[in-house]
Length: 211
Ligand code: BEZ
Image 1 (tube, rainbow, N blue to C red):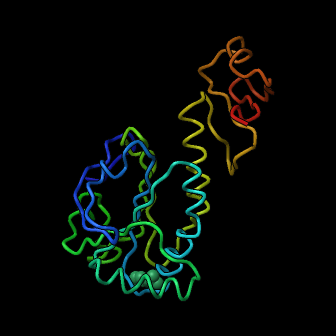
Image 2 (cartoon, rainbow, N blue to C red):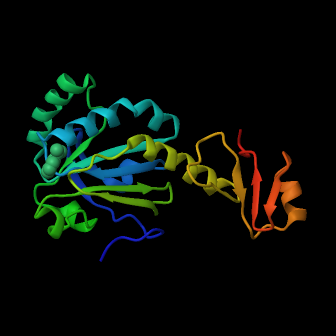
Image 3 (tube, rainbow, N blue to C red):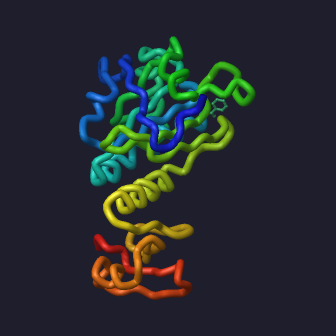
Protein backbone atom coordinates (compact mmCIF):
# COMPACT_ATOMS: atom_id res chain seq x y z
CA UNK A 1 0.00 0.00 0.00
CA UNK A 2 1.41 3.36 -0.93
CA UNK A 3 1.25 6.30 1.44
CA UNK A 4 -1.37 8.85 0.47
CA UNK A 5 -1.58 12.60 0.83
CA UNK A 6 -3.11 13.61 4.16
CA UNK A 7 -2.03 10.41 5.94
CA UNK A 8 0.30 10.58 8.91
CA UNK A 9 3.96 10.11 7.96
CA UNK A 10 4.91 6.82 9.65
CA UNK A 11 7.30 7.24 12.58
CA UNK A 12 10.54 5.24 12.87
CA UNK A 13 13.88 5.06 14.66
CA UNK A 14 16.94 5.10 12.40
CA UNK A 15 20.72 5.34 12.31
CA UNK A 16 21.89 8.41 10.42
CA UNK A 17 25.15 10.15 9.60
CA UNK A 18 24.30 12.48 12.50
CA UNK A 19 23.45 9.75 15.03
CA UNK A 20 20.30 7.87 15.99
CA UNK A 21 17.01 9.66 15.45
CA UNK A 22 13.34 9.16 16.14
CA UNK A 23 11.76 10.68 13.04
CA UNK A 24 8.83 12.50 14.66
CA UNK A 25 10.98 13.81 17.52
CA UNK A 26 13.63 14.93 15.05
CA UNK A 27 11.00 16.80 13.02
CA UNK A 28 9.61 18.58 16.08
CA UNK A 29 7.35 21.37 14.79
CA UNK A 30 9.24 21.76 11.51
CA UNK A 31 8.26 20.87 7.99
CA UNK A 32 10.27 17.94 6.65
CA UNK A 33 11.58 16.52 3.39
CA UNK A 34 12.38 12.80 3.50
CA UNK A 35 13.96 11.65 0.25
CA UNK A 36 15.57 8.47 -0.98
CA UNK A 37 18.26 7.89 -3.56
CA UNK A 38 19.12 4.52 -5.10
CA UNK A 39 22.75 4.00 -4.14
CA UNK A 40 25.84 5.63 -2.71
CA UNK A 41 28.84 6.21 -5.02
CA UNK A 42 26.62 6.67 -8.08
CA UNK A 43 26.73 9.67 -10.43
CA UNK A 44 23.21 11.16 -10.46
CA UNK A 45 22.81 10.69 -6.70
CA UNK A 46 26.13 12.48 -6.12
CA UNK A 47 24.84 15.54 -8.00
CA UNK A 48 21.46 15.47 -6.21
CA UNK A 49 22.96 15.30 -2.73
CA UNK A 50 25.45 18.09 -3.43
CA UNK A 51 22.75 20.37 -4.82
CA UNK A 52 20.34 19.66 -1.95
CA UNK A 53 23.08 20.59 0.50
CA UNK A 54 23.64 23.88 -1.39
CA UNK A 55 19.92 24.65 -0.88
CA UNK A 56 20.20 24.40 2.93
CA UNK A 57 19.77 28.17 3.47
CA UNK A 58 16.55 28.01 1.41
CA UNK A 59 15.22 25.07 3.43
CA UNK A 60 16.21 26.82 6.70
CA UNK A 61 14.42 30.04 5.66
CA UNK A 62 11.23 28.01 5.23
CA UNK A 63 11.62 26.03 8.48
CA UNK A 64 12.18 22.74 6.66
CA UNK A 65 14.42 19.88 7.84
CA UNK A 66 15.89 17.57 5.19
CA UNK A 67 16.64 13.87 5.65
CA UNK A 68 18.19 11.61 3.00
CA UNK A 69 18.02 7.81 2.79
CA UNK A 70 19.40 4.86 0.90
CA UNK A 71 19.73 1.20 1.71
CA UNK A 72 23.49 1.62 2.16
CA UNK A 73 25.05 1.67 5.64
CA UNK A 74 26.00 4.90 7.42
CA UNK A 75 29.68 3.89 7.06
CA UNK A 76 29.26 4.07 3.24
CA UNK A 77 27.43 7.39 3.47
CA UNK A 78 30.34 8.78 5.50
CA UNK A 79 32.87 7.74 2.85
CA UNK A 80 30.70 8.96 -0.05
CA UNK A 81 30.13 12.35 1.61
CA UNK A 82 33.85 13.06 1.01
CA UNK A 83 33.38 12.46 -2.74
CA UNK A 84 30.28 14.68 -2.81
CA UNK A 85 32.21 17.53 -1.23
CA UNK A 86 35.16 17.01 -3.60
CA UNK A 87 33.09 16.85 -6.80
CA UNK A 88 30.13 19.14 -6.00
CA UNK A 89 32.03 21.71 -3.91
CA UNK A 90 29.57 21.36 -1.05
CA UNK A 91 29.67 19.50 2.26
CA UNK A 92 26.53 17.43 2.97
CA UNK A 93 24.83 19.35 5.80
CA UNK A 94 21.81 17.19 6.58
CA UNK A 95 21.52 13.67 8.03
CA UNK A 96 21.34 10.60 5.79
CA UNK A 97 19.67 7.42 7.02
CA UNK A 98 21.60 4.16 6.67
CA UNK A 99 18.69 1.84 5.90
CA UNK A 100 20.53 -1.35 4.98
CA UNK A 101 17.77 -3.50 6.55
CA UNK A 102 15.23 -1.59 4.34
CA UNK A 103 13.00 -0.87 7.32
CA UNK A 104 12.20 2.76 6.42
CA UNK A 105 12.28 2.07 2.66
CA UNK A 106 9.57 -0.60 3.06
CA UNK A 107 7.55 1.56 5.48
CA UNK A 108 7.44 4.39 2.91
CA UNK A 109 7.10 2.22 -0.21
CA UNK A 110 10.39 3.49 -1.63
CA UNK A 111 11.31 0.19 -3.30
CA UNK A 112 9.61 -0.38 -6.66
CA UNK A 113 10.95 -3.80 -7.72
CA UNK A 114 9.69 -3.54 -11.31
CA UNK A 115 11.75 -0.36 -11.69
CA UNK A 116 14.87 -0.96 -9.62
CA UNK A 117 14.99 -4.42 -8.10
CA UNK A 118 15.80 -4.06 -4.39
CA UNK A 119 17.11 -0.48 -4.27
CA UNK A 120 15.11 2.64 -3.41
CA UNK A 121 13.88 4.76 -6.30
CA UNK A 122 14.02 8.58 -6.06
CA UNK A 123 11.13 9.17 -3.65
CA UNK A 124 10.31 12.49 -1.98
CA UNK A 125 7.87 12.99 0.90
CA UNK A 126 7.10 16.50 2.11
CA UNK A 127 5.68 16.43 5.62
CA UNK A 128 3.89 19.26 7.43
CA UNK A 129 4.32 20.31 11.06
CA UNK A 130 1.19 18.21 11.79
CA UNK A 131 3.23 15.16 10.58
CA UNK A 132 0.83 14.68 7.68
CA UNK A 133 2.09 13.89 4.17
CA UNK A 134 1.61 16.98 1.99
CA UNK A 135 3.28 15.84 -1.22
CA UNK A 136 4.90 12.77 -2.74
CA UNK A 137 7.11 12.47 -5.82
CA UNK A 138 8.63 9.36 -7.38
CA UNK A 139 11.35 9.48 -10.04
CA UNK A 140 13.25 6.58 -11.61
CA UNK A 141 16.96 6.11 -10.96
CA UNK A 142 17.90 7.47 -14.39
CA UNK A 143 16.31 10.91 -13.86
CA UNK A 144 17.74 13.31 -11.31
CA UNK A 145 15.15 15.43 -9.50
CA UNK A 146 14.77 19.20 -9.69
CA UNK A 147 15.26 20.36 -6.10
CA UNK A 148 14.41 23.95 -7.07
CA UNK A 149 10.95 22.54 -7.82
CA UNK A 150 10.83 21.07 -4.33
CA UNK A 151 11.50 24.54 -2.88
CA UNK A 152 8.81 25.99 -5.16
CA UNK A 153 6.31 23.37 -4.00
CA UNK A 154 7.13 24.08 -0.35
CA UNK A 155 6.37 27.78 -0.99
CA UNK A 156 2.98 26.78 -2.38
CA UNK A 157 2.24 24.29 0.42
CA UNK A 158 3.13 26.81 3.13
CA UNK A 159 1.11 29.59 1.48
CA UNK A 160 -1.98 27.46 0.86
CA UNK A 161 -1.83 26.09 4.42
CA UNK A 162 -2.37 29.63 5.71
CA UNK A 163 -4.62 31.33 3.13
CA UNK A 164 -7.70 30.20 1.19
CA UNK A 165 -5.83 30.28 -2.10
CA UNK A 166 -4.24 27.87 -4.53
CA UNK A 167 -1.31 28.38 -6.87
CA UNK A 168 -1.71 28.21 -10.66
CA UNK A 169 0.42 26.53 -13.29
CA UNK A 170 4.16 27.23 -12.98
CA UNK A 171 3.50 29.64 -10.11
CA UNK A 172 6.52 31.07 -8.31
CA UNK A 173 6.72 32.84 -4.97
CA UNK A 174 5.58 36.44 -5.43
CA UNK A 175 3.20 35.81 -8.34
CA UNK A 176 -0.60 36.10 -8.33
CA UNK A 177 -2.59 33.25 -6.78
CA UNK A 178 -6.08 31.82 -7.28
CA UNK A 179 -8.88 32.51 -4.79
CA UNK A 180 -10.69 29.39 -3.63
CA UNK A 181 -14.00 29.02 -5.53
CA UNK A 182 -15.66 28.32 -2.14
CA UNK A 183 -15.27 32.02 -1.18
CA UNK A 184 -18.07 34.30 -2.33
CA UNK A 185 -17.09 37.58 -4.04
CA UNK A 186 -18.37 39.62 -1.04
CA UNK A 187 -16.12 37.69 1.37
CA UNK A 188 -13.21 37.77 -1.08
CA UNK A 189 -13.30 41.59 -0.95
CA UNK A 190 -12.54 41.56 2.78
CA UNK A 191 -10.23 38.51 2.78
CA UNK A 192 -8.12 39.85 -0.10
CA UNK A 193 -7.90 43.63 0.42
CA UNK A 194 -5.37 43.99 -2.44
CA UNK A 195 -8.30 43.23 -4.76
CA UNK A 196 -8.83 40.54 -7.37
CA UNK A 197 -9.43 40.05 -11.08
CA UNK A 198 -12.34 37.86 -12.17
CA UNK A 199 -11.55 36.04 -15.43
CA UNK A 200 -14.43 33.61 -14.86
CA UNK A 201 -16.57 33.29 -11.74
CA UNK A 202 -14.45 30.25 -10.81
CA UNK A 203 -11.11 31.83 -11.82
CA UNK A 204 -10.21 34.85 -9.71
CA UNK A 205 -6.62 36.04 -9.31
CA UNK A 206 -5.25 38.08 -6.43
CA UNK A 207 -1.75 39.25 -5.47
CA UNK A 208 0.00 36.81 -3.14
CA UNK A 209 -1.54 37.71 0.25
CA UNK A 210 1.60 37.34 2.41
CA UNK A 211 3.82 39.63 0.29
C1 BEZ B 1 22.84 7.22 -10.38
O1 BEZ B 1 22.77 7.89 -9.36
O2 BEZ B 1 23.41 7.64 -11.36
C2 BEZ B 1 22.19 5.88 -10.44
C3 BEZ B 1 21.97 5.14 -9.30
C4 BEZ B 1 21.39 3.87 -9.37
C5 BEZ B 1 21.04 3.36 -10.60
C6 BEZ B 1 21.24 4.12 -11.75
C7 BEZ B 1 21.81 5.37 -11.67
